[in-house]
Amino acid sequence: MALSNNVIGAINFVAMLLSIPVIGAGIWLSTEPDNSCVKILQWPVIILGVLILVVALAGFVGAFWRIPWLLILYLVAMIVLIILLACLVVFIYMVTIRGHGHIEPSRSYLEYNLEDFSGWLQRRVRSSYKWDRIRTCLSSTSLCAELNQSYRMAQDFFNAHLTPLQSGCCKPPTECGYTFVNPTYWISPINTAADMDCLAWSNEQTQLCYNCDSCKAGLLANLKKEWRRADIILLMALIGLICVYLLGCCAFRNAKTEDLFRKYKQGYT
Image 1 (cartoon, rainbow, N blue to C red):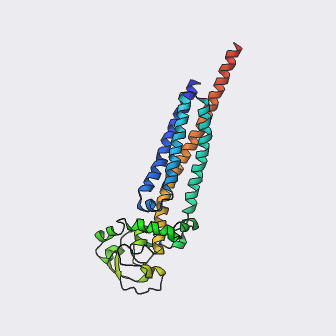
Image 2: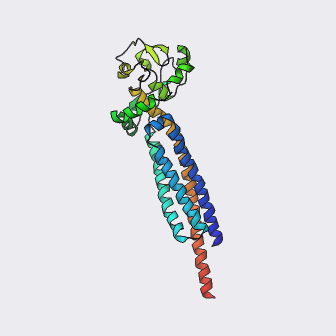
Image 3: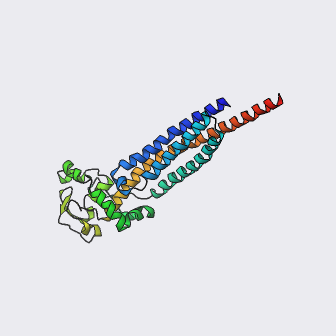
């Protein structure tokens, strides 16, 4: 039984290690400007990762100190956390399956439409109350100001590969026909009726297109890209945890069998 307990302990140590990329994914999301402003995904991921770490630690302690009830608690709690992690992986995939950029003539950057994204993501930014808080957070960053330092000429800017957030929030939509002065200052719109965003644009550096639907769409496109990356990490951790859990179940069953066999031999002799 001692050997089986050592095996279970080693397996739970691996489970503890697998919690690190989950926690790391949540911390990485919290450092991204868009996610830090929206605050939707990072805390559930971090909390789930911490719970996996705590439960794996309990299993590790239960194995090496031979505490059966703690091992049983570990098995029950870990399967619940694995199910929650699987649900989170599927949820992230489903809400990010829609939404893509559109090519505009003579532009290297893409334009984004809010209607292209999933309804659940759209509801996160359509509410004026929610968006006012997000907009204030975004406008306080150097997201758009950095463009003025990088691009002086119009053609250089048109050839730039902007992030979705920069494309949606820092400039007016291309279809409006504004004339470039610098990346965050545009004049003489040709077609203000093309989109409501054409009227929402402001050369005030704290306003720009933060009130535009294109900014909301750019935010969601940025979230989609980052959430997809985090989802890959979570999926890999999930697969690892499932393998570790199955091995742990087998080791626990073998340990119980060895214990029963030992007691049987002692009773027989």
